[in-house]
Image (tube, rainbow, N blue to C red; front, side, top):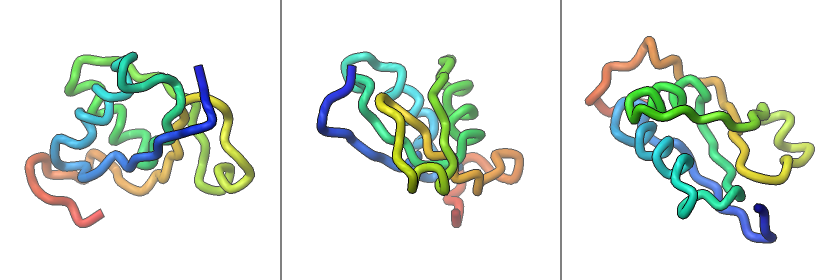
Length: 95
């Protein structure tokens, strides 16, 4: 279900709790009514979903594709800029 109002949010600090919280929000039908724009690295969101014990399957676009318009519904703008393998969890990340 989509409407004329969309909420956009960034996944947040990849080394903190933000990826897991983002995954939980996206999996919650009350919070995610199918009209969100998520901005961040798809690998970081997948890591957060794994930590939360969830599976998240979102349509994904690149930042370049996003400039041409976004599909209806919840969508991930994959920045592709933060490799989870390079993170130290529990420490503030500069990206």
